[in-house]
Length: 165
Image 1 (cartoon, one colour):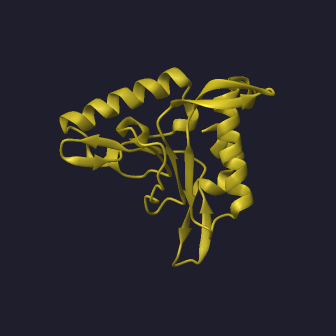
Image 2 (cartoon, rainbow, N blue to C red):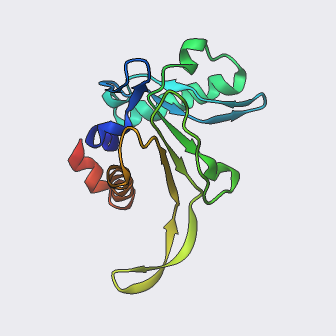
Image 3 (cartoon, rainbow, N blue to C red):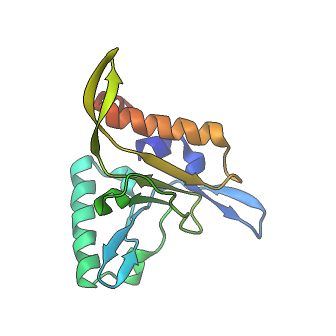
């Protein structure tokens, strides 16, 4: 949610009737969950107000409800931004499809050890591919790139995330 606070254009929607972009004050974070009945997207309401522990607990709770088929319609609607972790399927990269009426979706691939140059030395590092699909009506590539860079910085250097809280 820190990256969405820094790049609020990606937490918006396009009102086609009013012909305007609506920036949303709240972050209702959807996340893709595969079940025996297919893909569902539970929504963590007001994710921006939660700490990491509370956010993690809500992911666990909603994932279990998805698997048991007990999610309510209210728990499946109203997302403002979605995470799609296709890494759990052994996939490195993919192009997520925006969950309308949201303006963007972040995809996360699997974490794999790869040779990587770090501080001038070749080392085996844990590497993940991030993918961002976004509506060009709400922002341009510079904003999207800044968002992705901030997310990557938070993953690579957790102190960056702590400074932004």
